[in-house]
Length: 203
Image (tube, rainbow, N blue to C red; front, side, top):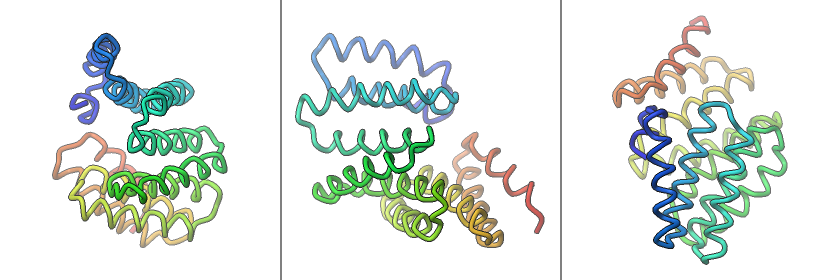
C-alpha cells in the first residue's frame, strides 16, 4: 500500500499479488479484498479501467460473502467511481448513494468523505455542477476533519476542475493552488499534474 500511495507502482504490484495469495491461503477475505482494491487503484493510474472495475467487483464479492458491512460500503463506492470513469455516471450515482447511506449508518467519516468525492465526480460529468460542488464541499470538510492531506488535495484538484467547467476560472485557480501547496508539502508526484493545470490557465 505504501509503495502504491507514493506512486511506486512497479514495486507495489508484485507485493500486492503476493499479499493476495497469502490472504487467500490463510482465509482472510478482508485482507484479500483490500489487496484487490489497491491493485484496482494502480490499474486506474495506468488507465486500465476495465481491469480496475473487475478487481473491485472481486473485492466487493469477498466482503459481501463474509458480512463485512464497512468494507461493503467502501467497495460500493469504488465500484461507483470506476463506473463513472468508464462513462456510466447514473450507475455510478446509484452505487455511491448505497455506499453513502451505509457509511452514514456506520458513522464512517472516511467512507463518507470518499463517497461524496465520487458523487461529485459523477455529477460533474453529467454537467450538474452545483450538485458536484456541494458534494465536493462535504468531502473536503470531512477530509480536513480527518487531517487526510493527500485526499484533501486530490479532492481540491477535482473541485477546481468543476469550478472551471462551470465557468468560474478564479475559483478553479484557488482550489488548484491549495491542492498544489498540499501535494508539494508532502512531496507527492501528483503535484506536477496540478501544476500543469495552473500553468495552462492565465492569471
